[in-house]
Image 1 (spheres, rainbow, N blue to C red):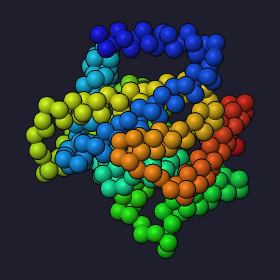
Image 2 (image 1 turned 120 degrees about the vertical axis):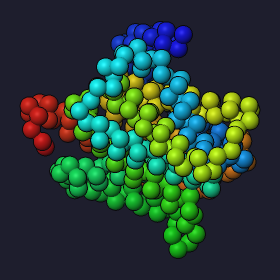
Image 3 (image 1 turned 90 degrees about the vertical axis):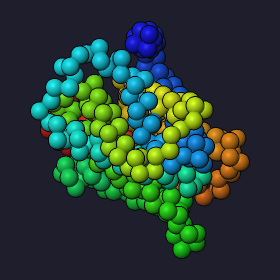
Image 4 (image 1 turned 120 degrees about the horizontal axis):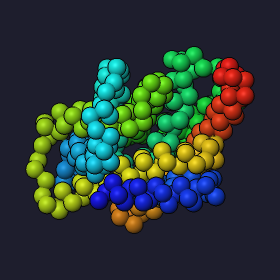
Length: 312
């Protein structure tokens, strides 16, 4: 049933995306941002009675089960790989990152956590510089510096106490950046569904280990929330991946700012949280910096293709 709905939705998207590719990509990212905001609000709500580590495990478990029928249609060949160690390393990194992120959501307002998490692309760029040896010119260094300034505007060290939640969000962002760099390496030899399948399996196992130490059997109502969290998260990620099929990263990356808008709205409606002006100012600076970096990466990729793959 799920697989059939997925195929129908994909067919409709392909038809619409053929005529309006950029609009389709932007629409998908906006919808995904709303899904993520709803998921994060649900995590924060459930964490009042359940430990974030246990929520993280169920998010992965139910997220995997929702889309398992789609992945299993490829059969056992989906799990064939010569790079098992890297799959495990990436899944472990992602699992720990999620635990840090969910814990942070229980400690700080939604909009604050979301704005700090927007630093992710900055860490990806830094990782590409130091670990992949990518060349970066002055303009990208300026964009990275602007992103750091935006982060400092939000957390305001020296003027406001740096919360443990903000530190956990930054740790999570660094780990996600490492995971993306690993994915870049895996994508050279592995299929997309193989990468997704191993990520889901490893993350479910990794998050189950710490969840055992804080385990409390959830109620039926809580199970309903946990299923919702898993479905929202997995659907959101698939929508983002699909968006990049239709539109350039530089076109849809600025739309990721809507995550902050949706998070602020959810925080206000559900928890009565009102983000201060510095969250919006800092978040705006970070989004501007990451959007510019995404634009430069698209330009560089186009140049490499024209030059036959020669780095620029």
